[in-house]
Image 1: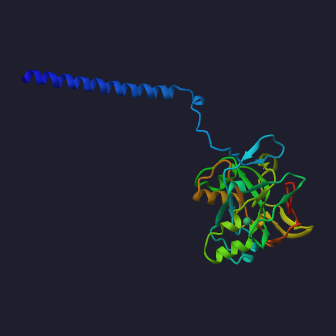
Image 2: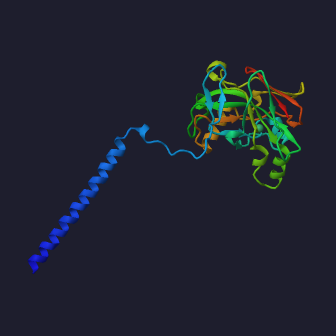
Image 3: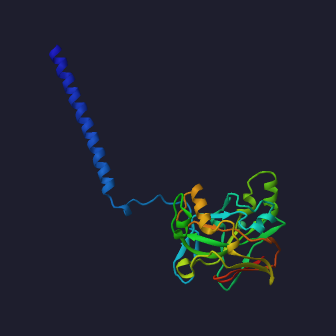
Length: 275
Ligand code: MN
């Protein structure tokens, strides 16, 4: 009896081992088959509706710049910091984001219709230099920061000032004042390989031919290089990120019918009409 039992156990163990080996072998084979399959054959799951990537035209190129994130710096010119009620000394810079699909591309030599947004009665212009990144990283030192810039353009950080102020007064996020449809207006990107980097030069905005904002890029509290460096401490920057580098003083309201003309020395003008 004892010998019989031993035999049974031995048979069971053998069967178990064979099954384990077979299963393991099958899994290994399956794994090998998946790995061996060419990447193209592994189609990504199909989206349930189409979703177009957001891009910005590049001046003089047939290729476009794909946008990943929109960063904006707040109060980066001393005179504007004062008009917004803060201390213009070199406090640490602060940043906010706009949604990528808030971009409104404006072609050179056109006056693009820009819709007056909902909910506001105090819609403000903020003309700004915009830097577009071709690469990124974390903790980028300022002296290396401009190596990551692909190019520049003229932008408008359009702002529902009343909503921004109301939210700020309640110590709530002012997203509704900054991050709405069409709030990130800009012209085509000009490669830095052609324009060089922008550390100085006139920046201005006129409404219906009357100059309102008029300053020089060298009046930025934090340069574009320093902004990239500071941003990269808080976020890993990547190719496709763009940065609105702050607006000079004399921001102000626009109404339907107004034509805005934005100028930065070394870049073509950018113009919109509020409709
Ligand atoms: Mn701004």
